Amino acid sequence: MAFPLLLGGIDLSVGSIMGLVAMVVFDATLLFHLPGWVAILAGLLTGILAGLFNAFLIVRVKIQPFIATLATLVGYRGLTYAISGRQINPDLTVVAIKDPLLLHLDGKVGQIPYAFIYLVVIVILTMILLRFTRFGINIYAVGGNLLAARLAGIDADRVKTTAYLLSGLFTAIAALVLTSRMQSTQEGLGQSLELSAIAAGVIGGVSLNGGIGSTFGAALGAFLIGTLSTGLILIGVTGYAPQVVIGVVLLIAVLYDRFTVARRKRKWLERQHQDSAAIGSTTSST
Image (cartoon, rainbow, N blue to C red):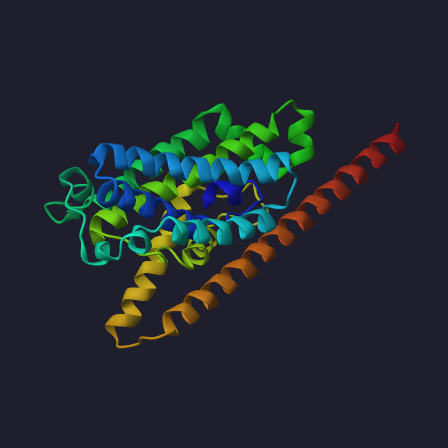
């Protein structure tokens, strides 16, 4: 979610992409009996294509990111139900994935889960991508000021397309890990996940206005949300209370983001006023 947010956009379809990717892997393995590596490639390709389609709607069709990804949220979820192997063959409801390669996507090295290792590797790679490559510089430029980025010769459409492609790809990786962990999937996998992803990004310091933040901050935000949810469960708070707490934390983070933006604008105006006053004083003295 960090990449669309850095552009000042959003991707509401990540939960549905997760469900779609998992169902593609499920069907490839249990319905069509394809090898695990083929199912993994099919899942990754599904995530990439879903991200590219979001980018097509936003970049080419010129639909606002919120509306475009809201539409694909519904569309991808419907497609997941349409291709569900459980619907095509009800006997698969009680069949688990047994492919060794798929099952080994999720596991542990000692006490360290593979999922944590994947997270660390992805955060390091994306931080390098954002801080030390032309694409990273461009994504901050486009998110900070689209007009100025275009005037500077940056291909904003290509930057947006790449950002949504990466959003789809990383969602697909998460779907593969969950599918391996559950050894199955369900049509509703990932439902409402987009809210947690947005909350993680904003809580981690990724500005909703774009141009500010990092994937490291988003990862820390995800850890905070996970800690809150787990802590509430451990003290016996169940039901919808964790979602309420996450919603409150998200609201506080958004309000803080708005306050930070307003303060930054105020300081910029004050500097402009001081510069104008200094220029005026110098001109009068001359």
